[in-house]
Image 1 (tube, one colour):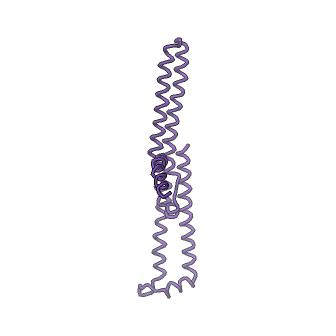
Image 2 (spheres, helix red, strand yellow):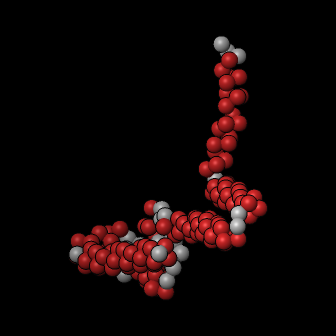
Image 3 (cartoon, helix red, strand yellow):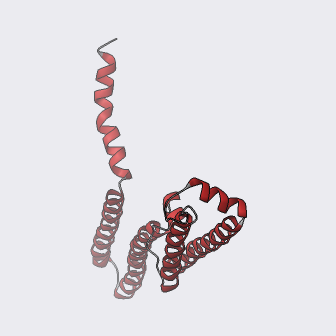
Amino acid sequence: MEKILPSILAALIPFIATYLSKLNKASVRKNLMEDAQKKIDFLDKYFQVSSKFLHETEIESLKLQLSAEIQEVKSQISSSEKQENLTDYQRLTVVQKVFLTFSPVSVVGWLLSVLFYIILVFSVFLFWGFSLDEASNFSTETFVQSVQDGTSIFVFGFLMIILLLFRWLAIKEYKRKTNGIKQ
């Protein structure tokens, strides 16, 4: 029994490796190209054999049919390439959404991202500024007093609303533009 399990695992390793290699993006593209090449080779051989037995009028109609099938293969390859390019744009991770670390695809997207970071940096410096006392030393009492006054809460709330608005607009612009690319 103890020799059977390693033997089974050793026998399954090539199948598992083959399965995992098919999941790779480059491998998927390679498989698609191989399938397309096989189909084109078949169509070419079919035409060569059929042209020996058919009349000229039938050969012309066969050429049109085969041409349409080759165009279909070409469109499948083109659509898969376009879809591969879009998947990189479409998927945003949580970190990319929170900190806008994706590359915007339009001028408006860049502007919104820059404004987001300007307000974020301004908010951090303002937060530190509310912690400074008259002698320019950091003090928790000064920060607590500014929070109790209510002005710092109002200012931070206002800045966070603007910050979240720019973030939301940047993500919305990104999704709108990538959906436009898709079509």
